[in-house]
Figure 1: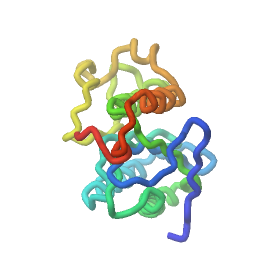
Figure 2 (figure 1 turned 180 degrees about the horizontal axis):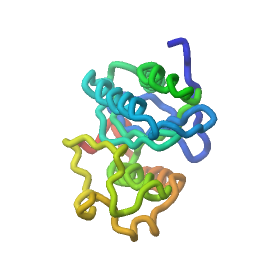
Figure 3 (figure 1 turned 90 degrees about the vertical axis):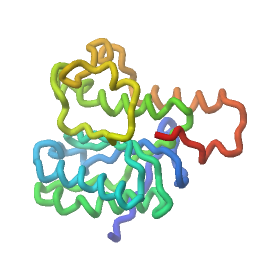
Length: 205
Protein backbone atom coordinates (compact mmCIF):
# COMPACT_ATOMS: atom_id res chain seq x y z
CA UNK A 1 0.00 0.00 0.00
CA UNK A 2 3.05 2.31 -0.05
CA UNK A 3 2.89 2.41 -3.83
CA UNK A 4 1.77 5.79 -5.08
CA UNK A 5 1.17 5.66 -8.84
CA UNK A 6 2.09 8.75 -10.76
CA UNK A 7 -0.69 9.72 -13.10
CA UNK A 8 0.67 10.06 -16.62
CA UNK A 9 -1.25 12.51 -18.74
CA UNK A 10 0.08 13.36 -22.18
CA UNK A 11 -1.30 15.95 -24.60
CA UNK A 12 -4.14 13.66 -25.70
CA UNK A 13 -4.94 11.86 -22.47
CA UNK A 14 -6.07 15.09 -20.93
CA UNK A 15 -7.69 13.91 -17.70
CA UNK A 16 -6.01 14.85 -14.48
CA UNK A 17 -8.62 15.99 -12.00
CA UNK A 18 -10.09 13.76 -9.35
CA UNK A 19 -13.71 14.87 -9.30
CA UNK A 20 -16.43 13.06 -7.38
CA UNK A 21 -19.44 11.89 -9.43
CA UNK A 22 -17.63 12.34 -12.74
CA UNK A 23 -17.09 9.64 -15.37
CA UNK A 24 -13.57 8.37 -16.08
CA UNK A 25 -11.96 6.18 -18.72
CA UNK A 26 -8.93 4.45 -17.19
CA UNK A 27 -6.15 2.30 -18.63
CA UNK A 28 -3.79 0.36 -16.40
CA UNK A 29 -0.93 -1.67 -17.94
CA UNK A 30 1.24 -4.43 -16.60
CA UNK A 31 4.85 -3.55 -15.86
CA UNK A 32 6.83 -3.50 -19.12
CA UNK A 33 3.51 -4.40 -20.78
CA UNK A 34 4.10 -8.10 -20.24
CA UNK A 35 1.22 -10.33 -21.38
CA UNK A 36 -0.52 -12.67 -18.98
CA UNK A 37 -3.70 -11.09 -17.63
CA UNK A 38 -6.01 -13.20 -19.80
CA UNK A 39 -4.05 -16.44 -19.80
CA UNK A 40 -4.63 -17.15 -16.12
CA UNK A 41 -8.17 -17.57 -14.82
CA UNK A 42 -7.13 -16.62 -11.30
CA UNK A 43 -5.91 -13.22 -12.51
CA UNK A 44 -8.93 -12.42 -14.65
CA UNK A 45 -11.29 -13.45 -11.85
CA UNK A 46 -9.37 -11.34 -9.33
CA UNK A 47 -9.68 -8.29 -11.58
CA UNK A 48 -13.39 -8.83 -12.17
CA UNK A 49 -14.08 -9.47 -8.48
CA UNK A 50 -12.20 -6.30 -7.57
CA UNK A 51 -14.33 -4.25 -9.98
CA UNK A 52 -17.41 -5.78 -8.37
CA UNK A 53 -16.12 -5.00 -4.89
CA UNK A 54 -15.32 -1.37 -5.70
CA UNK A 55 -18.78 -1.01 -7.21
CA UNK A 56 -20.50 -2.67 -4.23
CA UNK A 57 -18.57 -0.45 -1.79
CA UNK A 58 -19.70 2.59 -3.80
CA UNK A 59 -16.13 3.62 -4.49
CA UNK A 60 -17.13 3.65 -8.15
CA UNK A 61 -20.19 3.09 -10.28
CA UNK A 62 -18.95 0.51 -12.77
CA UNK A 63 -20.19 0.83 -16.36
CA UNK A 64 -17.95 -1.59 -18.24
CA UNK A 65 -14.43 -2.88 -18.56
CA UNK A 66 -12.28 -5.26 -20.53
CA UNK A 67 -9.20 -7.28 -19.64
CA UNK A 68 -6.58 -7.44 -22.38
CA UNK A 69 -3.38 -9.51 -22.26
CA UNK A 70 -1.26 -6.66 -20.85
CA UNK A 71 -3.71 -3.96 -19.79
CA UNK A 72 -7.21 -3.24 -18.61
CA UNK A 73 -9.68 -0.56 -19.65
CA UNK A 74 -12.42 0.47 -17.26
CA UNK A 75 -15.20 3.03 -17.50
CA UNK A 76 -16.74 4.22 -14.25
CA UNK A 77 -18.20 7.11 -12.31
CA UNK A 78 -16.07 8.05 -9.33
CA UNK A 79 -17.72 7.90 -5.93
CA UNK A 80 -17.04 10.08 -2.91
CA UNK A 81 -15.14 7.56 -0.77
CA UNK A 82 -11.70 7.91 -2.38
CA UNK A 83 -10.01 10.25 -4.82
CA UNK A 84 -9.01 8.82 -8.19
CA UNK A 85 -5.35 8.05 -7.44
CA UNK A 86 -6.25 6.26 -4.20
CA UNK A 87 -8.92 4.26 -6.01
CA UNK A 88 -6.27 3.04 -8.44
CA UNK A 89 -3.96 2.17 -5.55
CA UNK A 90 -6.75 0.12 -3.97
CA UNK A 91 -7.44 -1.71 -7.25
CA UNK A 92 -3.77 -2.58 -7.63
CA UNK A 93 -3.46 -3.71 -4.02
CA UNK A 94 -6.48 -6.01 -4.26
CA UNK A 95 -5.19 -7.67 -7.43
CA UNK A 96 -1.47 -7.68 -6.60
CA UNK A 97 -1.41 -11.18 -5.12
CA UNK A 98 -3.05 -12.80 -8.13
CA UNK A 99 -0.63 -11.10 -10.53
CA UNK A 100 2.47 -11.87 -8.48
CA UNK A 101 1.80 -15.61 -8.61
CA UNK A 102 2.39 -15.37 -12.36
CA UNK A 103 5.37 -13.02 -11.94
CA UNK A 104 3.33 -10.05 -13.10
CA UNK A 105 2.85 -6.63 -11.59
CA UNK A 106 1.15 -3.39 -12.51
CA UNK A 107 2.92 -0.49 -14.16
CA UNK A 108 3.52 2.38 -11.76
CA UNK A 109 1.60 4.88 -13.90
CA UNK A 110 -1.98 4.84 -15.07
CA UNK A 111 -3.76 6.72 -17.82
CA UNK A 112 -6.97 8.61 -17.25
CA UNK A 113 -9.44 10.68 -19.20
CA UNK A 114 -12.36 12.57 -17.68
CA UNK A 115 -15.39 12.28 -19.95
CA UNK A 116 -16.83 15.62 -21.08
CA UNK A 117 -19.57 15.21 -23.66
CA UNK A 118 -23.01 13.82 -22.81
CA UNK A 119 -22.58 11.17 -25.54
CA UNK A 120 -19.07 10.17 -24.46
CA UNK A 121 -20.25 7.28 -22.28
CA UNK A 122 -21.59 5.45 -25.33
CA UNK A 123 -18.49 6.20 -27.41
CA UNK A 124 -16.00 5.04 -24.81
CA UNK A 125 -17.95 1.91 -23.85
CA UNK A 126 -18.07 0.93 -27.52
CA UNK A 127 -14.32 1.54 -27.83
CA UNK A 128 -13.67 -0.69 -24.82
CA UNK A 129 -15.94 -3.40 -26.19
CA UNK A 130 -14.26 -3.38 -29.63
CA UNK A 131 -10.72 -3.47 -28.26
CA UNK A 132 -10.31 -7.25 -28.31
CA UNK A 133 -11.82 -7.55 -31.81
CA UNK A 134 -9.75 -4.69 -33.14
CA UNK A 135 -6.56 -6.30 -31.80
CA UNK A 136 -7.43 -9.61 -33.48
CA UNK A 137 -7.75 -11.57 -30.24
CA UNK A 138 -11.11 -12.95 -31.32
CA UNK A 139 -13.28 -12.96 -34.43
CA UNK A 140 -16.64 -11.26 -34.81
CA UNK A 141 -18.54 -14.53 -34.47
CA UNK A 142 -17.26 -15.10 -30.95
CA UNK A 143 -17.86 -13.54 -27.56
CA UNK A 144 -14.82 -12.11 -25.80
CA UNK A 145 -14.87 -13.64 -22.30
CA UNK A 146 -13.06 -10.76 -20.60
CA UNK A 147 -15.48 -7.99 -21.56
CA UNK A 148 -17.71 -7.09 -18.60
CA UNK A 149 -20.76 -4.85 -18.49
CA UNK A 150 -22.97 -3.58 -15.70
CA UNK A 151 -26.37 -5.13 -16.41
CA UNK A 152 -28.04 -1.86 -15.39
CA UNK A 153 -26.15 0.04 -18.09
CA UNK A 154 -28.04 -0.34 -21.38
CA UNK A 155 -25.58 0.92 -23.96
CA UNK A 156 -27.23 1.61 -27.33
CA UNK A 157 -24.61 -0.17 -29.46
CA UNK A 158 -25.46 -3.51 -27.84
CA UNK A 159 -28.67 -3.61 -29.86
CA UNK A 160 -26.61 -4.08 -33.05
CA UNK A 161 -24.52 -7.09 -32.01
CA UNK A 162 -24.90 -10.42 -33.77
CA UNK A 163 -26.27 -13.62 -32.21
CA UNK A 164 -22.84 -14.42 -30.75
CA UNK A 165 -22.64 -10.95 -29.16
CA UNK A 166 -20.01 -10.00 -31.70
CA UNK A 167 -19.82 -6.72 -33.63
CA UNK A 168 -20.68 -6.08 -37.28
CA UNK A 169 -17.46 -6.44 -39.34
CA UNK A 170 -17.84 -2.84 -40.53
CA UNK A 171 -17.23 -1.62 -36.99
CA UNK A 172 -13.76 -3.14 -37.01
CA UNK A 173 -12.92 -1.61 -40.37
CA UNK A 174 -14.24 1.80 -39.36
CA UNK A 175 -13.00 1.88 -35.75
CA UNK A 176 -10.95 4.89 -34.74
CA UNK A 177 -7.91 5.21 -32.51
CA UNK A 178 -8.19 6.10 -28.85
CA UNK A 179 -6.46 9.43 -29.43
CA UNK A 180 -9.23 10.41 -31.84
CA UNK A 181 -11.95 9.25 -29.43
CA UNK A 182 -10.45 11.51 -26.76
CA UNK A 183 -9.95 14.45 -29.11
CA UNK A 184 -13.58 14.20 -30.22
CA UNK A 185 -14.76 14.22 -26.60
CA UNK A 186 -12.63 17.22 -25.68
CA UNK A 187 -13.68 19.05 -28.84
CA UNK A 188 -17.36 18.39 -28.15
CA UNK A 189 -17.04 19.93 -24.70
CA UNK A 190 -15.62 23.14 -26.15
CA UNK A 191 -18.56 23.42 -28.54
CA UNK A 192 -21.14 23.31 -25.73
CA UNK A 193 -22.41 26.51 -24.03
CA UNK A 194 -20.61 27.36 -20.83
CA UNK A 195 -22.08 25.53 -17.86
CA UNK A 196 -20.61 26.01 -14.38
CA UNK A 197 -21.98 22.61 -13.30
CA UNK A 198 -20.53 20.67 -16.24
CA UNK A 199 -17.83 19.00 -14.15
CA UNK A 200 -20.40 17.28 -11.94
CA UNK A 201 -23.31 16.60 -14.29
CA UNK A 202 -23.61 13.10 -15.68
CA UNK A 203 -25.61 11.12 -18.14
CA UNK A 204 -27.34 8.89 -15.63
CA UNK A 205 -27.27 5.14 -16.43
